[in-house]
Image (cartoon, rainbow, N blue to C red; front, side):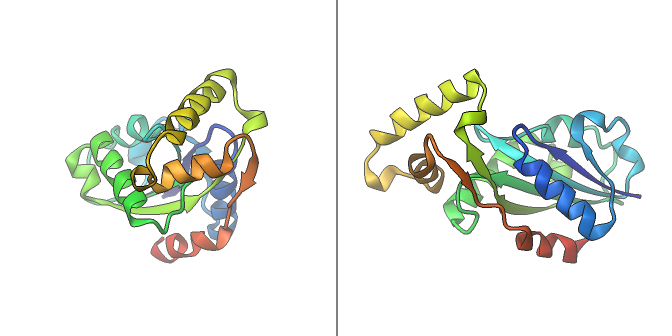
Length: 174
């Protein structure tokens, strides 16, 4: 059996999960609704990036008892350009810290670009983003990562970088 599992706070990751489900015929479920992950042979996890963590991924994937006979695909959804190697290297390192070595060494990782609508953020996230924005403005140009630049460019706005064609390599792997 195959499943698409997603962790989405404001809907961008859920849109990717639903589109992937539509294109593959594989059921998609929010991570909070998946109770027995070990029954699946193929697990595609799409997770929104928040402060370096992939929403729900650690809690979900670390429940896998034996990954040796499973295909595990992780796709992160973030604001920064997924073509920036420094950005993707950082995300990959954060994923590595969140998963057991067995699982991390068994996954394929993809990077998708999402979006943000500041008018939808809850108070906690608005406050956090304002703090990050103000801190980022003070950095020297050479210290600004792709993620920092994305925050500076999009702060206070509604932006949508969703590209369903970026799902094609994932579909090919499935």
